[in-house]
Amino acid sequence: MKNKKLRGYVLPTVYVLVIAVLFISVSFLGSALQKELQYQDLVVDTLDEDATPVIKEETEVKEESKITKPYTSSAVAISKSYYDMLDDETKQQNSLVYYEQTYLQNSGVLYASDEVFDVMAVYDGTVTNVTQDEILGNVVEITHNPNLKTIYYSLGETSVKKDDTVKSGDIIAKSGDNLLEGEKDNCLLLEVYYNGNTMDPEDFYNMNIEDLQ
Image (cartoon, rainbow, N blue to C red; front, top):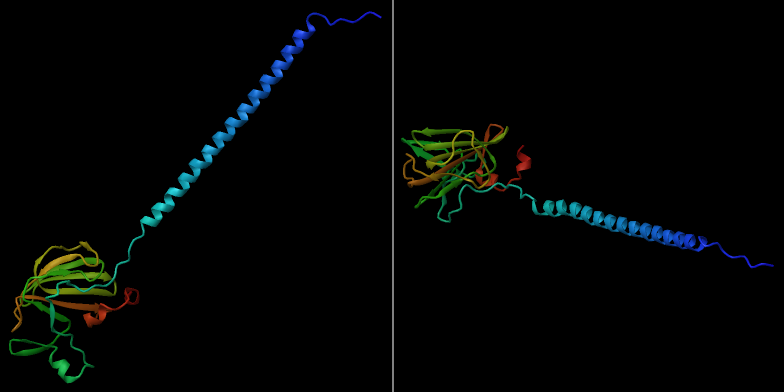
């Protein structure tokens, strides 16, 4: 038998096919790896985007406002307490305000000091009136909700005007004088009204604002 010989063009053709297969395989593998890397980058970017708001939410927690006293000075003391019909006779007598030979029941708490002190809003609200009283000096009224308001009398220089929004602890004025007999030059008379009725401010400071809606 005669030995069959491969034609001259067969081997080169085989080499070309093998090289083509290898090239296609390498290209496919490289493309797959590139997609995997892009997918991993996308996952990392997505995680970063998702994580950022969580940090912001933790750092943007707002502290709730609380009822505060209208002063911080340690030199301030109560001059006249709130008049309560249920108090004993001695305390009631100490809660009377004397003016022009007449004793009046104190509808708030009168604070006094030997030195000027800052007067602050006791809670968040809107200034609904700024007036002047011929006996009690400058007056600021703050409405906290439809059922609750506070009125600050005997003020000196005021730093708010009608329709201003205030927060608990914001300074609204300086202490001032009044024409009540025997009182010091630096006073503040605070009245608290809930549903149209007065309440003792000293009790009000310890209450939960949610109970006064």
